[in-house]
Image 1: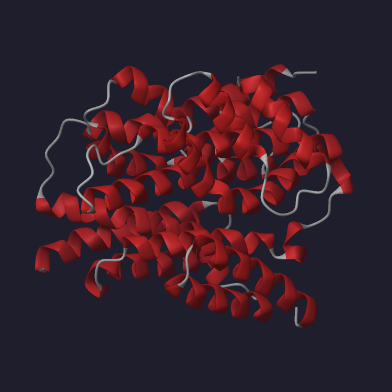
Image 2: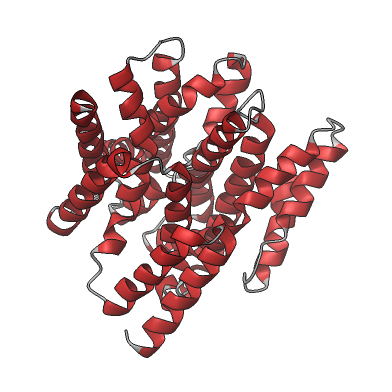
Length: 268
Length: 99
């Protein structure tokens, strides 16, 4: 099923990827063909992920192209994006890549950039309580910023509407697998196309990320006082980004925001 | 086609990344959190998201900052897809004409 999905994803990509990706149909059809009857939740997940996929494709192409310029083979790059599946850390790794690679440095930076997953998994944990571990562990393999944010926002909305269980595993998997297949396929395609690709920034696609994240944050908004830690995160992350090279800003921003939330919870 | 050091790096990257993915769940799965810890957990998603996009807020390119301001305003009142399209269009156009 995976292989079939990947092959279908790559076909529309060979034309220039503009507009809404077409793979949502093929993935949900594949699930319905598997005969589990819950295709509509899965499809809902894929559909809600579509705007994010739009912003992801140019980045995936650029990462693949950069990797080949750093001397990785297409197979090596595909292994990285398929096994690691965490774009931020992959950009950082490719940025730091040498021949031979500085293994400890790259692994440490990978951990650092992805340490936010610890917080994300913790925030998701209460919603996963009723699910068996054998389902949760594979599902967490495809946890990424987008699938997590969509899954969590959906669970909170369903909880507020009184729907049980609040967390919809198939919705989450729809968003996560759409993201996974898109990332894996288009990074591979980027590696194959290599240096023919220019800079995505020219076309404005990179603004999709702030747009998606800001809309998600609006969904999480409770009150001005509850949002104060976010402001702390923004300021610290921005300062660290400006003055300290590398990918420290994500960890620094997140940790200082949490510290602020911890301190503010005391005087509330 | 596959270099040994490269393979080792990729496998280790994948390993630590998966540990970060399951770590929060494994540690906090069966705990009851205090009010303070709950406040921290509720703030966490937003803190991570805003930190990831923080560089956009301190761009040196005025076109980018203007596009971000437009996207921000759109995000406070429109659904996901229109906001994304406005963000992409405003960034693309402003960079073309200003940046």
